[in-house]
Amino acid sequence: MTAAATERDALAGTVARVAADVPGVAFLRPGLADLLRSSGRTGPPRTPAGVRVARTSGPGPWEVDVQIVVHRDRHALTVARAVRDAVTDALSGAAPDARVTVTVTNAV
Image 1: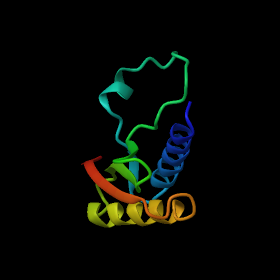
Image 2 (image 1 turned 135 degrees about the vertical axis):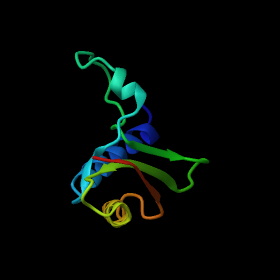
Image 3 (image 1 turned 90 degrees about the horizontal axis):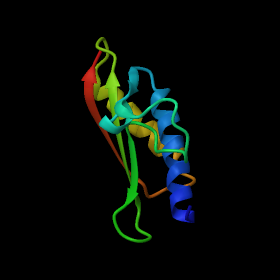
Image 4 (image 1 turned 60 degrees about the vertical axis):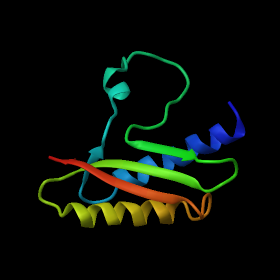
């Protein structure tokens, strides 16, 4: 695994933990691959569901995309802003120039 991939995976893990802990977040949205993946399968660690961390070009800033499902009784925009702020704060040391996008995909 390359140093960039290791850094990306560490950032993704941090983002997932921080986002899931924000009040109003029901869970991070799993993608189709996460839903189909066998729970008994072993192998290298994967990026957490609902989180995408990438660089668009070389050493540029990290692009962080978080997809969340919120609790129905919470204001989605307020929760999304809280997630963005929490993730930005959590990454301020490791990736201070990260661009964080939060998408609310559903409410339960």
